[in-house]
Image (cartoon, rainbow, N blue to C red; front, side):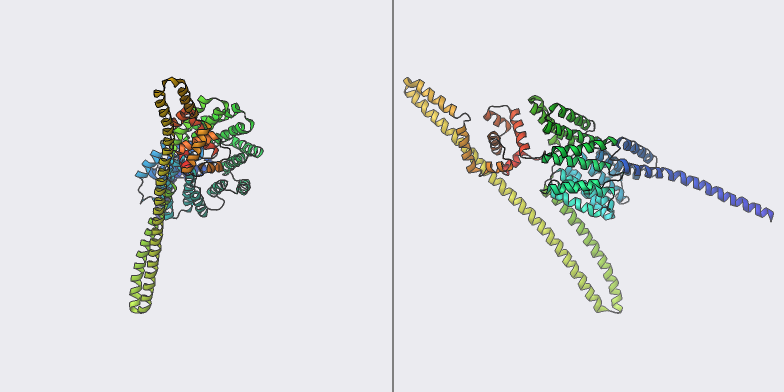
Length: 582
């Protein structure tokens, strides 16, 4: 009996030892994943306010992911965190897009649907930061679709928020607001993403007519942001408030809010926020103190940060403001150099999608999703119908028939509604296309008439000179008298005020109210501004206008840039397109 007890004890000890070893093994396997999740949470907390520390933590994530059995899945998480930090910090890594696309190809969408959607969201954010808004829109729209299939409200809100920001960048403010409001309906109240979306909506409202109300709402909302996650959002909000008070001409409030942002930013490591702050301070010294040297110091600091972080979007903006500052100091050469840099970078970043193209993409995705849902519903109804047939054959045949008819009617109504929606969308698109073609034909007709007027005027002058030359050949004695007449005609046609007045009269016949409409946009347009606008409306090139006005092409480019600023056109807006629509 004693021997049996000893054997039992040995057996129990052996089992305990095996369990301990197993526990140690499980602990060793679980620890890296726990560490990965802990680091991820820390990045979420500091990604906006501590850029350098966030990047160090991302490097640790990659190290863990590369040695993990779940390497493929964890690498997707790493790329998402990296894209999130780069977007928030304004630090652009040109290799990130390529690495995300490569990972998307490696992921089995059917096996890992969440990771695939997460990579699409990351790709959309990264492309948007690089100014590739067309592809960013496509990727983000697909991410929304997949997250909705997964019923992941957190990332639905994030993806919709990204779509709203992309539309805002390409001046589709109506679509932008729709996406922001839809994103807000998915976000959890008062969490970080919810606050980001609210701030974006308030920023968008500042563009509306009721700006005083929007500014008051934004001020109150910023004051309510008090958690550790909200510091970056508070700084962004104060920078926005200062900028809009600057547009209103309120010097004191503009400086007040920028100083608040400057004080808060001392505790933040975010190159993008610093770059924006330096640019804003430069604008303040440029407009109010007329201290061009101080303004250029701030603009240079902003430019250096953007160049270091390859932030081309902000760099294009700072090139433009530096060009204007040099122009005000009389340094035309430097102004022209930065203007050219700005134009080249703006062309590179030009957004390709039009509102109708973006809307068509959205409609197509919506219709495809609706079609899939309808197919699933039909299949479910067929299964239900088979079950009902079995039951009704035993008891209630009449009830089954009634239910089948009701279901078929509902299906038919759903199909008719979807078909009607699709036909309405196609009809609107065709109407827009026809209207666009008619406008092009009308514009071409007016341009031909304009050129005919100019040609007719010059032909009349040449005919008059020819008649004088003929008389001169017949009456050689009166050479001096006819020479004076020819000189007088030529001088009178060198950009005289009379010629300009005659030109305006003929021009208005072809382009009615063109100059009045320009004046309505900006009353302080000079006669020279109006003349250049008219030449551009006729389709003349910068070189041709320079020859007509007897100035250099560089001077015409500077005049063109000033006119755009006076008319309130954005970087993505073309002066030629604007004038053609007048």
